[in-house]
Image (cartoon, rainbow, N blue to C red; front, side):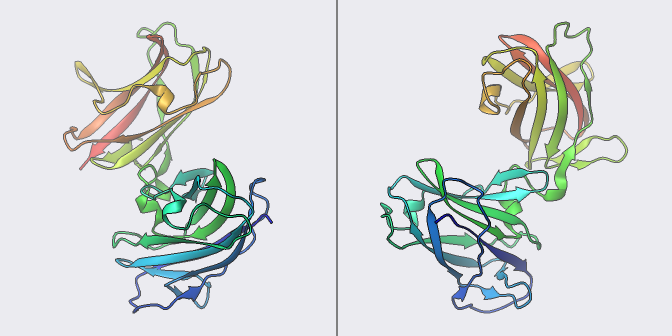
Length: 306
């Protein structure tokens, strides 16, 4: 039986004492994955249930245990479980820091038609904001989805290094590099998005803070093929062009390779500005090369803040 189940977490400020084990509502969410092979029997946790939303309420600074009883229609011990935040715009962001080895949290190997209990721990930090965000929990066996659940969990987004807040997914203003600098560019930049910044009203720059992660996502259509592709960013200051020292130039670690001419590609990488970075407004050039030759180039603005 193929089953996806859902439940809701709501983070709140209200103080409450120790909560007994509560039954958490879940529902069949449809045929999201063709390979799902499990029946969910029960979901519970040591939280309070909100009377209005039927949500599992979590308090900052506390730890919680959630239990999922399920009956698998598969066998094996190469089982993983991960959580993903489903953000606006179709972004599916993995939950950073989660131990994806499901066998650390249940008995393995999984035995077909034998009830299992997967138990996972949640630590709710005091810095987490209020709110409700949809999260998918997905169990796989040998890379194939077998069990899946949806939940709404407010604190989730703070944990994501690539997605600090929903509001911070900002389309970046960008321009072409001067033809005098690069004569043989072979790509079209379709869009540039910066997740983890706020738009400066005056300059249109993306405002990012030191020691805070931001994700640069570049959608482009190449007019070249190959897999020996690099990407680097350079801050353009008066009389000097300074490369970002912590940036990994191997572009194929952050997009699908080989690049195929005429086929849209997405380059996405996480950027964390060290405390040593200077403050101020800078033009930043992003330059992609193939075999050492410049192929894609654009310039955007960043305002680095404390």
